Length: 229
Image 1 (cartoon, rainbow, N blue to C red):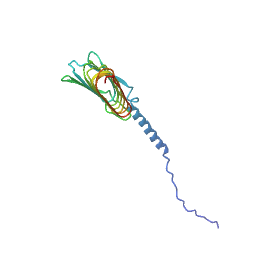
Image 2: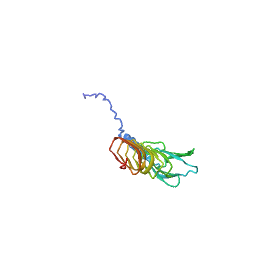
Image 3: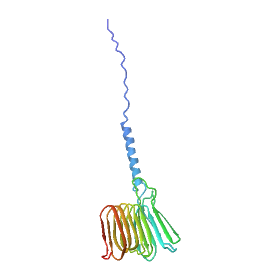
Image 4: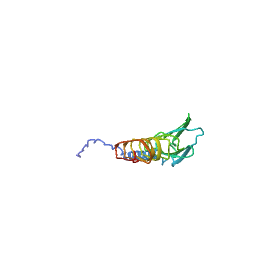
């Protein structure tokens, strides 16, 4: 008689479809989006090319003193026949240019230059030029940038929080400050108070000197004064 053999049923194994392709597709899309976002923040991607904007302030009122505050940017102060403030801002089309506000009250011209809302990997790129009569006192400050001043005879109060202060042929009561930068230049005479937290101080006094104070926490100090001082 023929023999019949029964084979037991074997469990059926099902294989899950591989999803590595989908994962790589999602990962690639994430990289593209991240790159686009960084380009947008920096200002060279979808935001469009960088643009330059300029603002000029010519006050018509009498100005006896000037106070100027720059959030981020270099500041140059020189003497001239009238008061002129030029603000140049480089920005992208998404972030916009720096905001400049000015006001004249009781003979005091107040100017403030502030950056648009700061974002990751983007900084404020602003330069300010201030022209004023030599006999007009000035108080000027920048939070991130350098200050240069020349040919002022009525005194000046200059402070660069993160940058150097450089002067040429200044006179009167001078207050020169830097939190992280050098202080240098020539002074015609008067009262000088110079200090920096980190950086050197090099000052040369050309004419009559009333008082000179110089202090730095880190850096050399070199002072050249008239023989009769």
